[in-house]
Length: 223
Image (cartoon, rainbow, N blue to C red; front, side, top):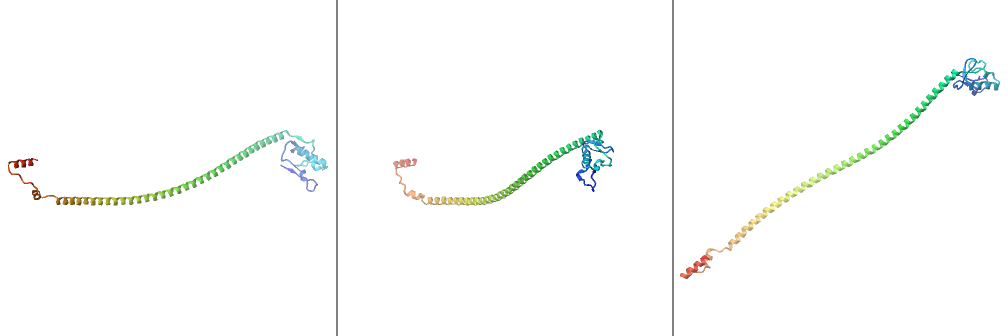
């Protein structure tokens, strides 16, 4: 790579310089240096236009050159073509890599968004699970309190039933005693109104004396 810039004491401008950074059509000067044809021809024509010998010299060694003295170089042109093909190939690979990198970036962004959405959903599910666990804890507490209340009421009812059974047994016992007393009283009252043998004898009829009387007495006895 080289660049030829006009002397600082001249009236030439910087855009009048020549460079060999890019060679499209290679030509060789009589001194053996290689330049791009369009660039070196422009260089020479600029010297003719301005009548300045600075542009009629080789930019490297100051040997006098002209358009006629420039000769095309097939070998250099082939090398330049190969270089351009390689540059094109590598540029294509670079473009493909850039496109693939962009696609990968888009996929990564999409995955990040999905991850963010999944994290958000996971947070919501976790919050819901926490709420559900809290509700379950409250329900368990309520159930425990109800069980305790149920067992307490059950114990109270069992005590009341036991008391009622005891009262019923006591009442039945009292009823039994009352029946016994009543039966004894009824027996004692029935004994007061039972007739004695002496009383019965007073109300008996006298026997008939004689044959007829004995027969009547026998009939009454059979009866």
